[in-house]
Each structure stands twice: as structure tokens, then as C-alpha cells.
Length: 319
Length: 319
Image (cartoon, rainbow over all chains, first blue to last red; front, top):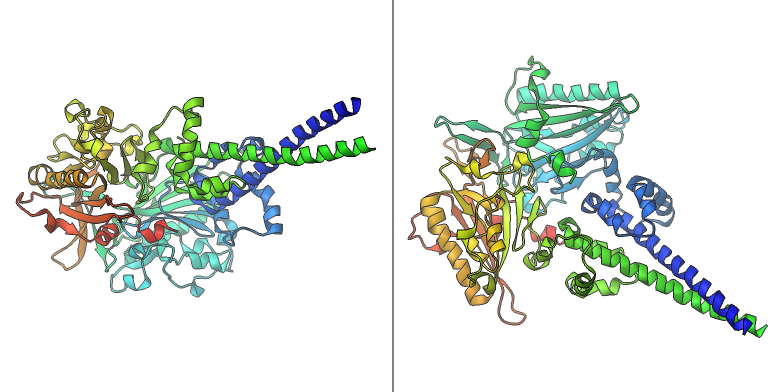
């Protein structure tokens, strides 16, 4: 009888331990697979906190944040191989550190992120993170790069290189190619037509806008880490009849919109430990501007840019 | 020795069984929680197939589809109580049966779904599912309803009732109030200003557009189940200088856009078992139209509507 009692005892203990181990293993497995989904899909990235909430036992591990757990997984990935070959979403946590202005039609490249506006066939916004390594480098050169269509956009909304022909507008970069020199592939990516908008050449793309891009790079040289969000605006103007109208040109068979203005929101990170980032916004009309105009005259309240574009306000982001 | 051997034997069997049970239990738990997340969040709904892929052991169960599993869970939910009181996303699988035209700024009401265009302060599209119960009912009445702002939209992009004052435009319903009569709350929801667009009153909202709405209800009476996607268009027109321009009015301090056209895409489900749904699209200019105009003259290729609006093409949806 003592033997039987001991057997029952041992079985009970084994049952509890094995049950826990089974649950733990399964939980680990789910969390690992969730990480792949989050890594590969911006939608999942957006709701990652909720997703992690679905996993119980290992929740504490997840609480340390996606980044840490992701790093922890890197070893596994590198050694076991990935479920998918595509690594391109791994830049998201770095570039989108200050949150997504929106989640519409994201195109994630290796060194910048684009939200594409299907209706206007121009980006909604382009987000970049400038570091000194990406600027003071001679690896990437725009001489090797060529404009190309992004085949990830459905054909109806996709812009091809031929569409800009005879339009009279420059193929203007939103994420400037000079900001992505650490790899040739990064520089090449800026030539995707999703990152291109029709800009007035003389006096804008080759004038004041270029000066603004140089100013951003200068900020990066001085402070080391700069985030830039660039995009088009379609601002209304008053007609003779005292009513307000939005009016912008569209060209080519795809009806590509010519924005009336362009904006840049700049976030400069402080070099001091714990220092707050500094923000400023610029809005420039897409017309021939006097090159002698002081850049400061294009300074604009960030709230105005947010409200004129469809950038999400922080109040929404935090919900 | 025989007793010891038997003990080891029993322990091994117990260990295997308990480990499996533990894993199974944990898996079931994760799947159950994932269902809550999917039920509560349109983003999660969009990637539900990927999410289910993260769960291993119970994957077969999930393969039977979200709807079935959701039903299976309903018993559990109703008896145990929900994690959140908000039930409003439960209509999504029914209304969005044919997929989302886009995932931008979704507002999910009890009987229709809105994608809100922050930039224009007008919906991008409104999706409804009409059943005979929602039309031939006298519970919901528009006399009891009042126009109201949707406080879920950030204040910068939110339209208030005062904003339409002196604009000269009707507060036109996108999801018609007459389509949502099965509950007073459903009818009230159609008066949220997210479902309202500035429409020319005489000859449009109170003319041809109304006729189109009546025609949709007639289809519903005849076929029992009709899906309708309604939205604004901002179409370009040729100027005197032979270039194309998009031009539309904006009014009020919030700069609410007045669409140049409105579209309705209609999906009529077949009454025959296994019968394919029938689709058609209408596009009407937002101007005073002759009420005698035949509705068929506004028929339009669905591809044209998709390409002129930013509705996602199927090729993208299936990726």
C-alpha cells in the first residue's frame, strides 16, 4: 500500500510539473510566432501590446518590450533561419520611434517609411531617421540609382516613370537621396516613385526646398539624430466669390496630383542625457520661390500642418 | 523492483499526457483571448489569418474560420461575461463580408461601418448591409434622431453640427437613415456627422440621390440581402488651358470638403443557393440634376470608381 501511495504521489507531482511545462512551452512557441507576425506586418506592429496581452504565462517577458524580446529572438532567428526571407520591417522600431502619423498604405523600405495616398498617387508622408552614418558616407551614390515604380502598389494607383514625362514637373524626392548614403540599396530605395512628388523645378526643388534639405542634414551633423516627416499639402485658397476652394493640378493618365505645398516636420533629439527633443515644421508653396528667401520665413506651427494634412494628432495616437 | 518499474512507467505516461494537456489548455486560452482582440479591433480583424497561424495545436479548429469559432465562443462569452463591455465590433464579420475597401480611420457603428477621411472631414466610404428586417420595420424613426458629432474623431478633424450652418449644403446621409430601422439606436447612428456629407439639396439630395436610395431598398425587398458602399469622389476636370485640375469647395473653419461627385457600389446577393452576387456602381455629380433623369444613365464601371476613389483593389486585398 505504501508503494501504491508513493506511486500516486509521484504521478501527481509529475502531472503538475508536466502540465506547467507543456503550457509554458506552448506559450513560448506562440510568443515566438507572434514576434514573426509583428516583425513582418505593420498592422500587427500597431496592436502589438494587445497581442502580447493574449499570452499569459510569459507576459512578464513581453512586458520588457518588443525591442528587447526581439533582440532575444535574433539569436534564434539567425541560427534557425526565418520563416520568411523578408527582413525589411526590422527598421520600423527605430524609424517610427515617435509613433505613426497614420497607418494608411504603409510601404516600409530599409531606411525610411512611406504612407502612400492611393487617391492622389503621391505619398501622404515619408518618415526618415537621419544619423551621421547615413549622411557622411560615400557608399551610396545617386549616380548609380534609377527612378523605378514600386510594384507593391496596385497597378491602378501605381506611378510609372513614363507618367512624369511632359508634365513639366521635377520628380522631387520626399526622403532626400542625400540622407541615405550608408548603403547603395538605401539610396536606390529613395528613387522608388512612392517617394517622389511632382515639384516645381526652378526655384523650388532646385532652390528653397534643396536649402531646407541641406539645413536638415546640417542639424543632423550638429545633433547626431534627427527624425524628419515630409509630405504634400493641398491647401484651400479664397476665390473671387469669397468662398474657399481646394484646387490642384493632376496630370497624366493616372491623374497624379500636384500638391500646392510641401511640409517638413523635424524632430531633433537632444545630445544631453534625458534631454527633450526639439521640433519644428516648415511649409513651402510648390511654386518658383526667390532663392534668397530666409528659411525661417517658412516656419509654421506644427498643429497647422497636422490639421491641414491628415497626420494623426497625439490625442488619437495615445488612445 | 517491479513496483519501481511500474512507478517510472506510470510517471512517464502521466508526464506525456499532462504536458499535452498543458500545451492544449494554454493554446486554447491564447486562441480564446485572440478572439477577444479580433472582436474588438478592426486592425486585428484584418490580419486574423496571420494571427491564427501563430497558434499551433488548435490550428485545425481555427481553420473552420473565424465565424464558426466565434459562434463557438459566444456561449462562453455570454456565460462568463466579456473582458470589455463594448460589443460594437461584433457586426464587422456580417457587414464587411466582402472585405474592407481600406483600413483607414474606421468607425464601427452597430449597423454600418465608416472609413473617415481626416483631411477632407468627410467619410471616405460607408459600408452597410441591408436586410429586409432593417428596412421594413417601424421601430427606428428619423423623427427621433438628431445630428451629432462623433467624439471618437480627434477635435481638429471632427465636424460639429454648427459647421454646416450657412454653408448652403444639405447634411446628406451616406448610409441612408431609412436603411436602418430595426432599432432606434441604429437609426440614430446614421445621424453621426461622420456619416454626413455636404450635398446639394434641391435636385440632388432631395432628388436623384433619394431615388437611388429608394432603388437600393427596392433591390433589398426583392433579393433580401444587399451590401452598399457609398462615398464621395473628387474628380478632375479640364481647364481652358488644356490641363486637368481637381477643384472642390471647402467651407467653415474646419474646411469641410464638398465632394464633386458621390458613388454607390451595390452588391446584391443571389437568392439561389451557390448563386454569385451581382454588382453595379453609380456615380452622380453633386449638382442640381433633372429629377426625370433615368437612374441607369448614372451607371458606371466599378473599376472607374475604385480607381477614382482610393478603394483598395481586390489584387491588393488578397495579398
